[in-house]
Length: 435
Image 1 (cartoon, one colour):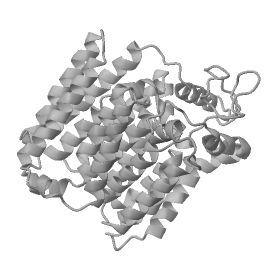
Image 2 (tube, one colour):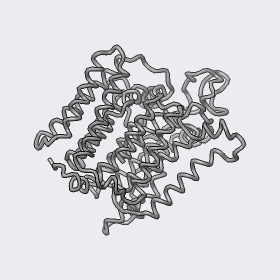
Image 3 (spheres, rainbow, N blue to C red):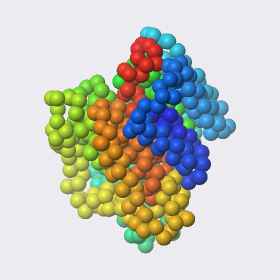
Image 4 (cartoon, one colour):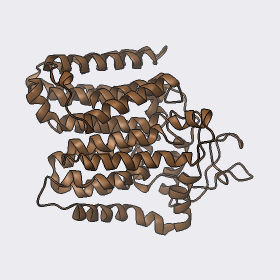
């Protein structure tokens, strides 16, 4: 699963997550490897690899990622030096650090926070609606105004093709409000309040996600996987453009951490996860994989508590203006057009096989098929849940009408959790230290 995560990272690095045939091949390879690791039988060739060889390959992947980040820092020497230092400190996790492992990982997390903060302060503010939605949404909420009421300008040309029919009015303003569920806004709000920029919340979310990965079972393996997530080649790009998948990855990280270390809190973490992003509902069929190993829990009880938490966060905003909320959070997603710059097989199908009917149904058919395979091959563990959900999302995005770096970034986070959640077995097989 770590290999699949790394390949997805390379794919979005290739052309910043936009359509590119080489990047699409990398995505396809990640699907094949992730699917085989999650649903297939153990490979004798992989099983025969020594623990040192696997650790060496993961370390090499981290070094390559750090070099790729450094490559994109351009003339900003401070950012470049920071990226290289992150690579060196991250690679040190491959050694037997014993009691120094967690403190050194803390240094990596702190350095990442500094590098990411320098990145958003030194880069020009991107002209992108995602950041605009969060900034204006946060300001509206602080002023007691409904962030889901249409009041947002269209940053692009009236005929840009970025929005579906009816989304831009005659005055070149959007007819929808904030297109994200309430918890995304609430999570980004501290960044806006404390730093005047919601992207500081993205930095905090990324740092916390990597920290939770490490703390799920502090070891050589989990530390390396945490660094692999933190050094995804386009991580600074995702943060600079304020994509909310960093917050979604954090919500998923909280869910996985509770599944592994704090079972009583897991239903509530699932509820917060469901309230963060629309496509979190795709995880619901896989919830039995999280609870089947615990006789004191039932999927019905867990989902019931989760829905109660999600409703407690979401309903106040829905009641505020049901029509505006539905228009922004639900309806807007379905009227969005096919983006021909998406990193998606659907773009290739649209280009070469335009006669294929019901093309936009393809990702949902494949998603359902992948989930059915996951349930058929059922292995009720948090690691399998994360892997199955990650592969299902990867397949879904790889054939969606819109698929960019941010969507695949969330997939990387789920695949990293799948790898990290298997840490007890990996520690035994790899001969890694637990300290």
